[in-house]
Image (cartoon, rainbow, N blue to C red; front, side):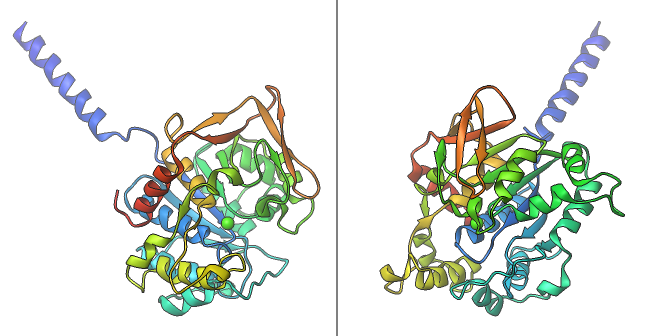
Length: 334
Ligand SMILES: [Ca+2]
């Protein structure tokens, strides 16, 4: 009897040890698709991902650039190295050259050591196929915080040396879900990621994506203001360099600029926060009864009904509290 009891206690200790060492939830494997260089929220979101990756809360599998601006890969390579992750694969969109004269890529590339240029990285569609083919089934979370052209290219892609599946089937097999920053909910017009000066792209992607999608709309991130706190950090930190340049030159910021970094909406950071931390019932709730449709211009609306795998977030927590949380993750003080 004593032997049995001892064995039982030992078994319980093993169970307890396994419980304590196992993660509370599966670590999300994330592909981050970004129009880095325009709005500073992409920079904030990428820094969040590096810190969350470094703390073991997620695995940053790859970064895909929607932007084709000359210094976008050098800038992101510099950020990746600054946060100790120089080997994160990057891909870039293959057409529709995009340039903004107020872009913060050049200042970041000038400030940070980097080795890769736009010519050194594969096309995003090829890298998507390569990375997805290597992953377990239904294991990848794709977080998009820019226009959706890379996703359209992926869905339309043909079998290649990486996978015998066409793009849509490859996505269906490997991707658990998409988290998309874009649009307005329940409806709205002229949001950049959904419009993106590329007619038909969002409409196609939303109709064709064969996996669940959670949207974080414009109305969520616009209430969550972050940036001014970076006035207090090391001037060589990429957050300081990027947000400072953005505050000084972005068309909707520069009139208010008086030498200090200004607060800015945190659209893209909300998609990262949801993808990694979840936070349903705490930061936000999810509306699931229905699906999102977009027209040719990317204007979108929510269609009520139980059809489909779409959901959108509605804010539950005080936006200032979420801003503090996002700031803590960016500055790794959590
Ligand atoms: Ca963005």
